[in-house]
Image (cartoon, one colour):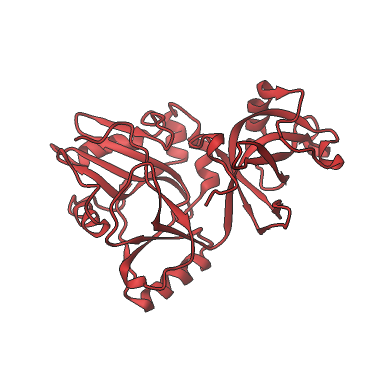
Length: 324
């Protein structure tokens, strides 16, 4: 295999369902954390930032048994399920635990959803079209039902099935679909237009820049988070604040993570409204989280945001005003 390790995965842009749907394959958007796994002489696994995550997800060790005597590099998503549906909130309990104890693995099992193949038996296949890579992946015979799964994709040529799949994602409040050109190669580390995120609701990554102290039941801890993103000049701009969507566990985790990051001055490049600055506690901009929101205001602020959880697979500098 000539691919370097760790391999940075290819990522998608946001967009609408393609008009020439017959040239695309459609997959569910799984709402987990991206992991590239290498099988052969054991199992290695890396997140988007190249972090070794094999110890976080012991379920991945089963890949060696599923592919005996073979070598492969797989691309997929670690997903936790709740009631049979992907749950990013539930996954939070596993995302930051380096060596989870057996009880946590039993309480919050995860599944590795594999949707691409980058190398097989020493041969790099990134230049093959998506449809051919998926055929090779399906040919590995990884059965559904275990901790590793290769779900099918839908050829967009069947308009009735596409409509049915879209209706299903809306009904189940799933994040949406990924549309992938059937003739597209795989380009590690690139954000490409031939992979397209078709979202049912808006989500955005944001840098945690500070917080407002809580009141009432939240007194002494975090009440709301002050969020930001980087502009084209590398300056942090204010994105808004979020005070809903937190579990008690998430608030406890944030209290512990933010305490050592406290700083005296605002990390934002711009002056902020007085009501934002009042009582604010500033932190070093090192943490990244996910928020769901209704829209962006004319000033570029989040409207009706809700916290979804922290991400340690994203570098704060990746969180820009051009994010897709």
